Image 1: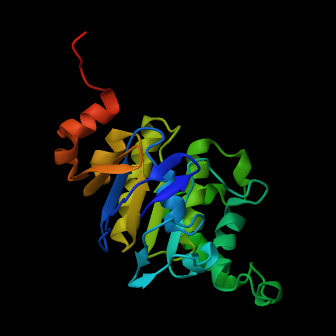
Image 2: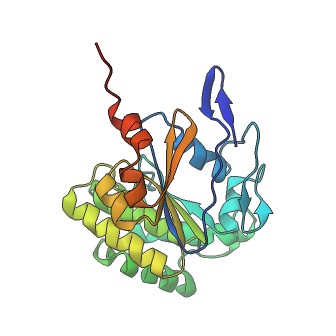
Amino acid sequence: MSKRFGGLQALKDVSLDVEVGEIRAIIGPNGAGKTTLFNIINGFLRPDSGTIVFDGKSIVGVRPSEIAKRGLARTFQIVKVFSSLSVLENVLAGLGVDIYPSLEAFQRSPFAKEYVEKAWKIIETLGIEKYAFVAAGTLPLGLQRKVEVARALAVKPKLLLLDEPVSGLNDLETQEMIDVVKKINQSGVTVLFIEHDMHFTVNIAQRITVLDYGVKIAEGTPEEITKDSRVIEAYLGSEEVA
């Protein structure tokens, strides 16, 4: 796919495939086009050319809400929890994806027993049950990121997109997120994530795609990518004779 914003070529002929059941990483310097790629995949943006096939069907031009219903959920680089709602209410909001935006959403109670039980299972999976009745916006960043992941899991995703899931987290919180993502993947969810933290990336990614100035410059296993001269140059620059 390709995407241009005025004179800026954000993505140029980028092609990749994500296999069912894998944990796949997208890395690259700032401005490489990573978040633009995510925004195209989940319907916030439309590519200028190219196509996106999810679960065997094209999703180009499909509304983000419909894409979510089909089983593709995401988190954001800048945390976007519903700040005034409790952790439990944030997850319950995600569980409503099947009935939004129909009038049925006004007829059902989000606090029905079936919804609350499902929400609690997700909250317990992420180990945040003691914060269930706390306003999400008052929690530390590490916990807010877990709340956002929990809300995304409520959509019952086949594919989960994580945009910089450990940005701003300390070492302990990063390790906790590694454990969370592995647990999610082991439950049968395919994971595609963007990240700058290479410790996190090489610890969980099975394959890595590298973007630089909107172009895919490398793809392979963590071991292959960390030794690739093109990747090293994109991040660190190259030596020139003065």
